[in-house]
Image (cartoon, rainbow, N blue to C red):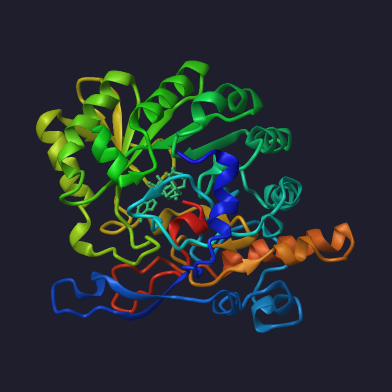
Length: 405
Ligand code: SAM
Ligand code: SF4
């Protein structure tokens, strides 16, 4: 296992080409549903990638048509009435694992340190976002615990008055940091774990150690982080035989297991609909073994997971059917990539750079005004849905680890 500090430089200096993905054509093999077949992809150069960022701050605030559609005041409500109060912040695109559905083993090119937003810059943007109604923050990546002193950022966010701070992590470095993160203000954690069989875990989550991840989950729970959720990306023929074992694990340890449909966000572009296990099949399987019922949310639910409780009172599971039953209608989130681009959807094809705004020479007031405009623009240009199910769906240019899942 490489040391945490070794990984970035070794990989960044590998000289291998960047692997941002661009869809060149949707496969149309004739197999139903054709629009959900694997798209062909090619590796893009960095300059090509930059050219897609056409909503850059300079364009945006030079009187482009984009800026004219950004509301000048108000909070983050889009044209479909969706209130945006959740911000997902990616703090790095690097990772010490190479999960089969996320990153290839070779060829990843990572951001240089100067390209990442500093913690201070993240906070400056968040302060504006909070004034516009952002109430909860999830920290993700890449592997967020690869970023040094993450507890400092958590404490800064907490001091800003954001009470709901959560983290999505592969769990590798969590055990030793859980206590400090919790003290800094981390309330909830999602730990990704796709197999309870050590060898299989290592094959899916390349570079990963199951025992270490499960121990991290125990430690997180012991120090008081609650709830501790376990994210399982279910892939047909790979780990769908373990659905019941995961339920047993969750029931035994008082952890919410969340089954996630495999999404077309893998960096290699190998996703195909045939590998997706539909959420409703998962529900049927669990229900056949331990009867479950849907949990009625008290208020409007923005969570991507449909919740089901065991009728015998042994807790609950979550099912995230992003592919077969998208939750776009109730989406409340915006995303900030590690290099400071705002995205209004995991599957968005456009981003808006706020790093340019943050690093401009303007006055603090001017920067704040532009940041607010950028957040409003991201919301006002949000589409009704991600469109995975539509024939003209095109994969986003960035994979999950680059966006921040
Ligand atoms: N490295 C951390 C981790 O693995 O939890 C955080 C980042 S990871 C990109 C966030 C979540 O996205 C994880 O739960 C991961 O399993 C999930 N994920 C990554 N690629 C995915 C894909 N193609 N389809 C569905 N989920 C995916
Ligand atoms: Fe790393 Fe998370 Fe992607 Fe796995 S899913 S490669 S742990 S960023």
